[in-house]
Amino acid sequence: METESSVMKKKLLTIVCLTAAALLFAGCGGPDKSAFNNAAPEVKQVWNQAIAADQANDYVAANTNYTALLSRDVSSEQLAAVQSALRALNQRMQAAATKGDAAAQKAFEDLKNLRGTSRPGRPGQP
Image (tube, rainbow, N blue to C red; front, side, top):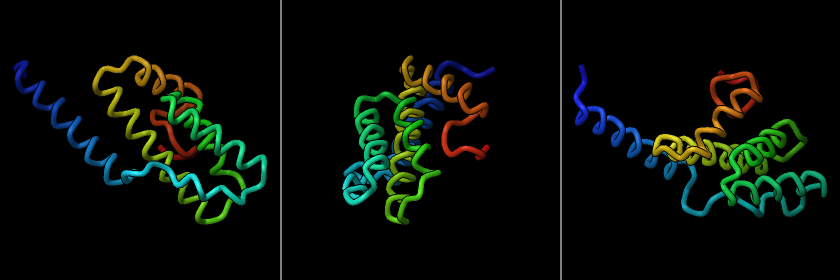
């Protein structure tokens, strides 16, 4: 049987690892907003909606919009920006859920139900 102390240590280690991973993958500046400056208006609109939702911690809307962009005709630079932003969003959401953030925990459940998978992200990935 694990002691309360060992459970707390495991939680703390998980939080530290997730934070380090988020910093590693996301960088310090967030998504490359300029990647979509020359995109078609409807694609740029989805990107801007994703960024706005991301900044507001509307995890489901941001994830849904980023994921929608993955299936659009975008440049390799734009695809890299979307993948990076989606990765950073999911890592931030995971870190928040681990800390007990009810909104992040609900977002994971909503995305799981929406996608029919155990992990939000790119469709078709386990």
